[in-house]
Amino acid sequence: MERKEEGLKALGAKTVYNYDYAPEVLETFENRHMENGYWVKFNCPEFTSLCPITGQPDFAEIIISYIPDYRMVESKSLKLYLGSFRNHGAFHEDCVNTIMKDLIALMDPRYIEVTGLFTPRGGISIHPYANYGRPDTEYEELAAKRLAEHI
Image (tube, rainbow, N blue to C red; front, side, top):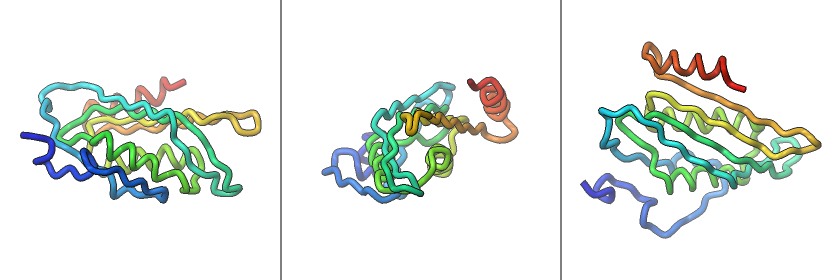
């Protein structure tokens, strides 16, 4: 099956950027290798959002790693989604948890983790980390272990 046949709208289309939080731009496609347990990792070094108090821009590298199940996130739609945070006011921890929860709702992965490496502001950098493993599976145990061992 061609990817176009999966109903993807962003891939191959003219790029339209939305700078207000827009989870509806996220798209998925079928995982053709569900029998394999494997990692997919996205590194997004140009993430920006706004401080909800001062309105000043915050800059970060967002790292998303997941073990897919039936559906996978399409990368162009992910780029557009992350770009939609540009004028969104949220604390660093909120950004990371929102991204994780939106991706869980979108594709129901076996496991996912999101890390935000925010650049320093006032001499302090913040690196929030959130993860999730599907309940009652080995991935729930993986999530607990990785969270406990996270540095």
